[in-house]
Image (cartoon, rainbow, N blue to C red; front, side, top):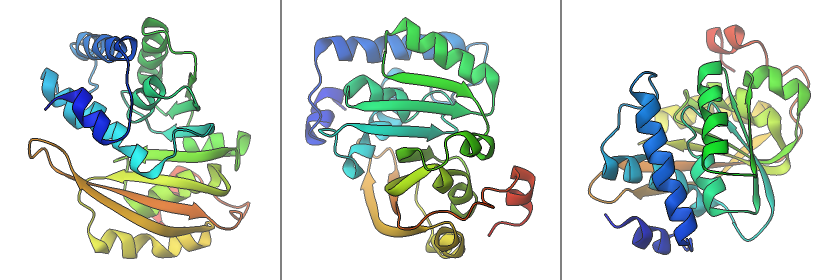
Length: 232
């Protein structure tokens, strides 16, 4: 796989400085992963394909020519938020994660590769929604949980007429059907399912595009234990 060629297919123009940032990102990820569990994928080309390119495939559902505010929920090692921030100055990115050591890694990384359009916070999504309710144009989550749980964590953060982009592997229709009630209650509507395959037979992926068509009732999100115990 040629990373730059694959980005061109996604209509992403990337310069040498940005390419250098990806290489710095890779090196820092592998260095820290030696003592902190960030990823099971460590081989250079696989990280570029299954993490960096997979993250940037989100542009299939985004217009990078417009300024956007984006919140990445449960970002882990920074996917899809950090790759997106590297290639787009128009994206003002906020990362939240419930594990403080991951946020410490991300804040060190942001300084190391000199990104000025990203902020990372140690927050739970259900708590952050109290501070930034309906505050973002776009909310993303990549393979964090089943869609019915993700919807309650993410949709309260989405502005009216904004979008929640759930990035998944192969999604069974069962998971979509299971989540349809929650999505409706929370003010969302599935408007598109974008399916694609990563290069080198690295797997099928899907982006579920959910538009915020009405305000989320104020009683949501509930505490995470309740969300998990009894999804909507």
